[in-house]
Image (tube, rainbow, N blue to C red; front, side, top):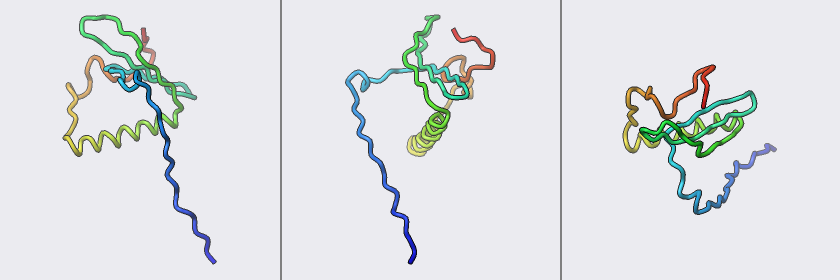
Length: 109
C-alpha cells in the first residue's frame, strides 16, 4: 500500500491595519545596509532644495527574508509591467538620488 502526502495547505494571515499605517509613507530614497545577521532598510524622502532628510521608517530583517522580499518585488514588477508596460528609469537608473546602493566605505549622514 502506498502512502500519499496530503496536499499543502495555504496559510491565511489576517493583518489588522491602523488608520495611520493605512495612509502609508511616501519615500523616494532608500539606504540599504547589512551585516552577517541582518539587512537594514532605511526609508526617507528628499525634497528639492532641502539639503537634509529625516528618516521616515526603518525595517530590519533577516537575510532570508530580504531575499524573499527581493523575489516578491520582482514578481510584482513583472506582473505590473505585463499589465501596464515597462517601467522606464530616467538616466538608465543612475539618478543622483533615489533607491541606490551605498558604495563601500561611503559615509552616511
